[in-house]
Length: 223
Image 1: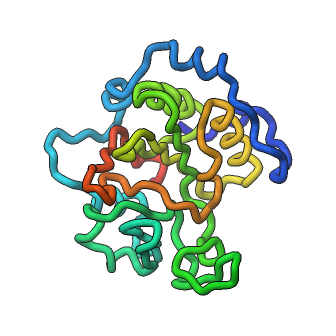
Image 2: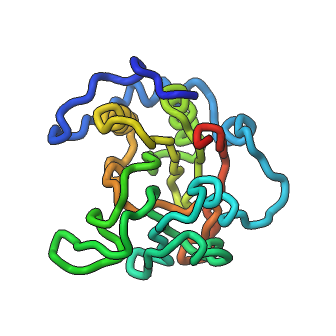
């Protein structure tokens, strides 16, 4: 699925407030009856054993050896080349969903950090997170959004949310902002619009040991 030019409303100003929840639209999408099983069955790539595959997913999502920012938690993280994390990702929880531009940057309060907007590169994926409602609700909403933008990966947080990774490389911010506003109107959290925001590593592990299971994976848009 390629980006659809007329599939979302016209973008508002980047400084405008995020839209309010459209309960009626959200409920109409959920009422179509699709759920987590459907998301899994529509996945172009599926697997039938319980082996952890975080390294494989990151190899697909970030080909080559780019700088990545990976965290065991929000307070324990580092930025280094992808190969520096080889064999460690199955027990890590968080990742910035775009390559980093340099090892260190400055935070808004003037502190040097391996995780900041200052050292985050151009956007590669726009991650949409739903956390209100059931996993079936979230799956239905992501299947709907996948008709408007290329869904590459859907990751359960191990808690209550489902993260959808939408391929965004090369897209204008105005188009991405319009898509994100539409997702927010369906109940998505706008926090992941921030390019440096941590999201859940596909098939990684939460701090409490729960697995962050991948229910959908389509590497085709990356190619």
